[in-house]
Length: 381
Image (cartoon, rainbow, N blue to C red; front, top):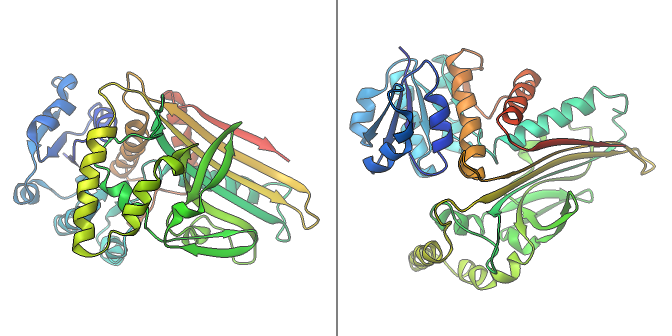
């Protein structure tokens, strides 16, 4: 029987693991600390789900043809896990962005009939689903016209439901968040391409459902123009994928920004590691403390006179509850949907992001609604 191997039992994994444990396929949770893996499945009883201490050699022997390996490990480990899958004829899933090294495996995975699905968590992941749904709806609307001008905005953020003066808390090591602050970004605003090496310096107020957040561009937005099916002859006024933070975040984090900007070389890496440990001690979520996730993806369309002719927005606003933290659910449950689709033979082979066909997009959005996530579609124009 095909087997699911879930690598990493951190907080962002638990809801997805528990959901897959109810499937017909056996699940093994691999984690460096065995006790954490055992805790993740403690409530499942005799469900066909077991826990194993993570070891690369043991994992290589355990992966069989047709299995699915889910990597929730640090991003630097994804490629090694993917290469094991390629060698053993197994499928691979991760919520992380597609790296250049991962993309280079596309021809081999296609030839082997394997699905290597990336970008299938929250952001990236659910944001892609919402974007594909919006753009497909616009293409098939009466308002569609190549002379129209489009503005696309996709922003996502996670923060404590009851914030303090720091305005933010961590579910896992802060080091990744710190490094991301200096990840170069590109986007389109007011018809012009912009770029920066310090995206948080571009923070501006952004209104979502009557509430103001601080928003800034995240990574390189421009490759997603093609990924979302926007043709080269469309007129783009805005196109940005970015990060949301609570009001007051930039002021509260000013000292952190200064440290990050000056962290160069080996000494800088050490300083970031020390800062990460300090932030983890001071600003991690308490056990059971509820978090909040907001994801807003909107597409507005104007005609050449500037009149609004079409507009829709997917708005997700979820909080932590007895099912787990909002962040954990919204990262790992979409991952579990991809695993099921692979095992059912529904997805194309090769290295891909989350599926973009309307059938899967609509189905998965509805499944998330049915599971209790607050997803609203707003329309105007």
